Structure formats: structure tokens, C-alpha cells
Image (cartoon, helix red, strand yellow):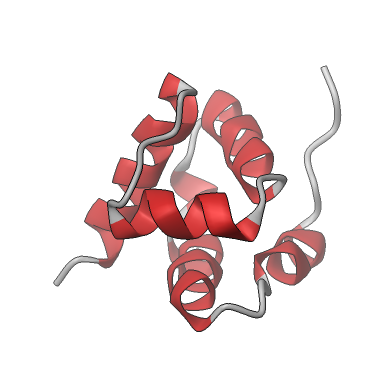
Length: 83
């Protein structure tokens, strides 16, 4: 099992340069990441390794990830930010 990223590295990885992604990912690291299971933290790190156009399409609902774990975590993040 690989070691998880530190919180500062996660914060940096969430800075995508695309406002729509920044406003979803950065607050999630601050407010929701710590409550994730170890397995979901690993899935979150895999999510951060994805390309911005894919992330944008998945989070905006234009497409779904072929990876069921990523798609489930996207739902968790979206549920957390919906008001």
C-alpha cells in the first residue's frame, strides 16, 4: 500500500487552474477529506491524478467516469457542496 499525500500536497494538487474544479476540490480537502475512509482517501488521490477536462465533464454531469469508485466519490463530493 502506498503512503497517502500530506494535507499540504493535497491542497496543492487541488489547485487545478479551472475555477469550477477549484471551488469543488479545495473546500472538500478542508472540510470533507478527513472523514473519508482510508480506501476513499486513496480513491480521492486517484481522482486528483485525472486530467482536468475529464474531471470537469464528470463533475458538471456531462459524462461519467468508467471507474465506479471515482464516480461514487464524485457523487460524495457533489453532495457535500450542494446547498
